[in-house]
Image (cartoon, rainbow, N blue to C red; front, side, top):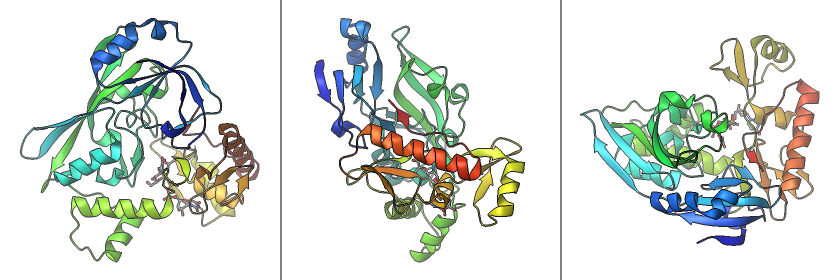
Length: 341
Ligand code: EPU
């Protein structure tokens, strides 16, 4: 069951060639429990729970044990006329799960269509797109606690969700192996579609859709993402490499005096505004540029890519060069969204 010196190249969406010292796949909780009790787990220097590998950058081989979450399964439970609870195992592909819900005409996650990765990884960074975040629809999750070897239920309120943030990136980092996530979705007829994001309304118009359905919104999002974002199966990438920075309102005002067309958004943090990292990076001249074998996507500067032979180190060097440029030009710090190992 354990494999040594295992290639992770096909298991990370950047397509970086890296090896795990030890690798194991788990398909059930009882398999996970056996791994947890094994000497290999007990003596591992580091442990990495791997889902879709779509938010990871390997800058070196992984000196430890990689546990690949392949626990599958989805179930639904009618709650009342308006809502249905849907539980998906953490190893399910996120987009397949969204399509399953769209097909059942359950509303709430259609704006999150085509996001790479697994269901289990979604709460870790509170994935979001086109006006919806996972925190808006999640009820609770089940997780295997590495400290006790027991399954626990964690309610949404306990996750301390923020913009691309949760306890699983902070004090609970490494403590849990998420096994399943439960969502409360709206039944057709009770769901209010979220078309607040400008591009969605525009695409619906182009599609000549007047009364959009859940499936129409999903199609519109798939269209927008396919046009702007590179398909990781074709060009290695991990979506947005940086978070959109949140700055004080005064700082934003100051920047607007110099750059009146700069995009900015309200931030959940009072007295702050959120800036568009992609715009800042483009202004620094990085869009479509390369550094060594690493590149900045030519249609969305927030996405760093591996067009073929980049190493993780080269992508990290490009990220640092971008952070330095943005700091020098705007005095704004860009934080990475991707987990760099
Ligand atoms: N922009 C530029 N140049 C660029 C990229 C963007 O000027 O190269 C400008 C756009 O014109 C727009 C603004 O920046 O005015 C925002 O761009 P966009 O709508 O493409 O969204 P984003 O802020 O770059 C965020 C998420 C995406 C998510 C989209 C849509 C983060 C870090 N990224 O990107 O999430 O799909 O909004 O909601 O919050 C991801 O996390 O991996 C991801 C793709």
